[in-house]
Image (cartoon, rainbow, N blue to C red; front, top):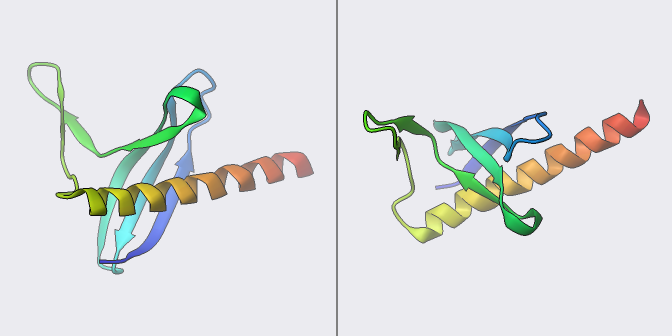
Length: 96
């Protein structure tokens, strides 16, 4: 399984821990939308898989990797694309 595309939509809320929402495509034939990029402690970032609210007020993942290798593949691809999108946005702001 190969990641063939990652699309990032940056979130412009200064006080929010949510920094971006991603869509990730595998082998040009399967896509997962709404993967969240969240700011953690010490300016680190992590991803959160798409989820739905349960009747008891909790959240349950709709999709998720079944092993740590796949989770790391997704995390690396999304965070690299997020870093690139942030740098491009900063460069665009500097030009203005």
